Length: 313
Image (tube, rainbow, N blue to C red):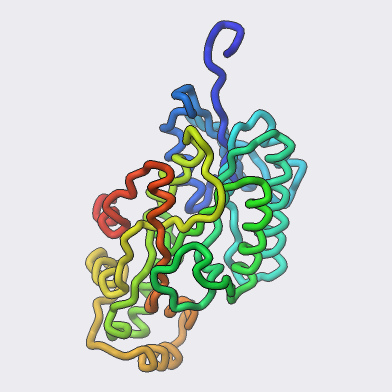
């Protein structure tokens, strides 16, 4: 309480606040109450010029960079919880390790110095590797990441867990600001027009706003939840249904005919584009991870699912 009897706001710092997932978390948290029902303030961290913009309402904009430890220590002063949503997913190996591992190490160190014991860290189900995977529990198969981005993110999980974080591994994330699931489907369905291997692959999907609800529930829960958890809608979606719904929204091509997997990969190899074999496998073969437990632990309704959310935007 302040000297005049007002409750002191409970502050959550969000790294990567202008990114796809981070911005959704900021939006969600700005309408939340702190544990116990008091006021909650969001400290939105970003390294770009947008971080200089004044905050609105309960959002405070702060310039900080995960590769600059000093900026993090200043930004985390007085913070009660942290949501770490920064990641690098490109092909530059040096940058991947700098941002994903070294950056996470710096975030956890700054959180520890600030006395923060409630941390949500976003990782990815891509740490499991190529697959196919169908209905696996957390660590149900050995993690075998196939890119430096995923390897560095798997290594970063260890730093987050050592700091007592909740590590969330989402599968495919849909929603406003998506830069790869929708665009990849659009391109790959043009290059590989038939239904991919019958369209029966099971995929773990989550809407970005539902993922943000999960993170908000974690940082405002009465009791912290820790450890690694899959973070997708509990009900998987078939690749064929995903394709049909995206096509209905003008985000993909309707299937023309059918082809087995060998035929699909041959068609892909005979065309050129931004997306390759790895993306076709992620979207067209089983990548289903059991995700019901985290929703139950946080007493949060997962909602109708990511495909139903598409029609509400």
